Length: 119
Image 1 (cartoon, helix red, strand yellow):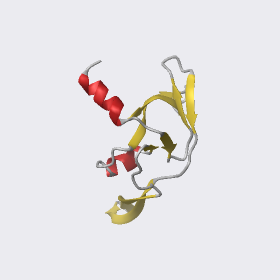
Image 2 (cartoon, rainbow, N blue to C red):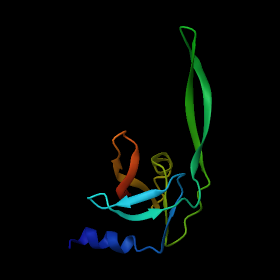
Image 3 (cartoon, one colour):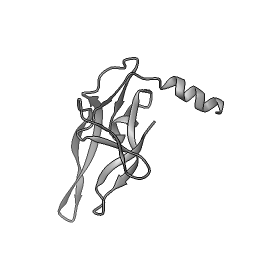
């Protein structure tokens, strides 16, 4: 085992993973077998505001402006949160946030699970 892998394992010794998305997070293995389902225990979102940006050929144009996170608890040692990519991107300093990674989709393109949680 290389040094980087050992450090990651030590860093992520955790006691809890909490899901702060509005959906169940289904973790599967490579064959699609369900390993764990993590139900929502809260909801973290960014505040959002839509502002007018003009008009083109009689069609109003607007811009979405994302603000501060809402509903996300403060850092707590040993607790990690699954959040949306938008929330994670807005908080690069938070090392306790994960996003679903290696997503699996059904025949209609809907996400049905993931193989891992991304940093």
